[in-house]
Image (cartoon, rainbow, N blue to C red):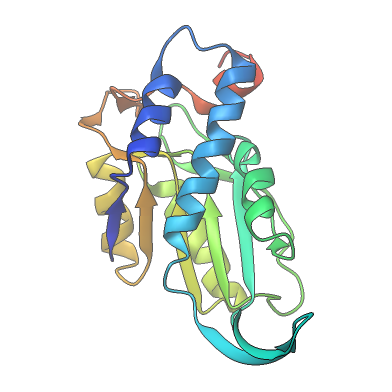
Length: 208
């Protein structure tokens, strides 16, 4: 597994604004959107290309076109805030929502929705979830996609914990993880420290 933590100045600046306790939900959502676009840019730097000859207004020329079909798998509900930004980068991508919530006692993911029917419509799927905390939801999402027949899976998130990264690495050493930050640790309730709180609640103005 390649763990890639962005060092881009814009990513770090926007992440600092995102972490602030007094950032209102509408600003929080906008920052998630902007960070997602930057992280998608970095997470797709190894996609395969093919050559194609096209006509410009002046003459034919050879250009590079993506040769791999791309898909996104947002983990509900917090991952919803990343989808629109991801589709701005790749508007023809396939989107497959994965509904999970975390049991607050066991911290294990409980799946309540997925429609992975028919053959996969993309060669590469990027799992979208702002927080990589225990890593169990990410592992379950990867299991679902690989069981469906997806050949290449990546995880794109905003903040991760060492425990979450280790969990994914142990289960799926072939899956790359792209983050804006790798924080210190999890607390006793499974929240990332220092983190930013509950990403879903902060996006939508609710409380857990």
